[in-house]
Length: 326
Image (cartoon, one colour):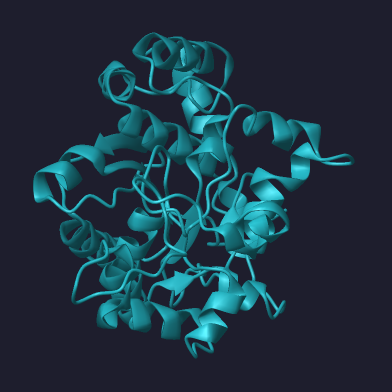
């Protein structure tokens, strides 16, 4: 690493403003795969840590199942309570769906999912289990109730805002550009390319476990990252909002993207060759690394995140995106 990069690396570390800045940032590219081998291969975590001497360390890790990720995060939180973790999945479903199942809070909904509803919704139709047609994806087509004028109903407010609204007249062109060429996905879609429903439903047992041991969950709860009695914070993340438009499945595109970032972006300048090589070699690792570094860029905003007062968002949640806490 050059002297200039070392200086940039120190300067770009989030500053400890009265004990409020996170000491560790973790971004997890998630997976809903059933098999342990698939989980260990596809779940990647980027980890930024501020060390005692003021330097920072960035790591990129895989090899854990969902349950093992939960145990690992709990251990990290014991070591560094002032930690923010983002997970690439939907933390909830549309408010009308929670109400239909008698869930007054998102935590009630997670318990409902864990008690058997989640795997029942994911099951294919059989003699014992009647499939809920609202959960769709190959081989099942999107149900008629989610087509045409009913299409917005399959999205939460945060998904419509991030994935659709910015591309309409009057939307934010910068935010719209990040979604260019991407088909918006609903948590009800559990099959087919880019589906998010399976991973989200299988994340909820982990979210419930982390919340039970003291993790705060935004926006249902506000951040509590103060130096005394600090609590780790969980936020929902969508990797496309972090990376912007890039052909992530193409190794050459990943390599070019990261090379340009390391050359022109101070946040990425201090990354080691070993970390970059992992991100170049895997789309999942790439998403985890870029998401981690975007969290670093906006690290000072996490302490200001407050619980929402909006009755719909209290049930549906909000996808964290760069700058949202400013």
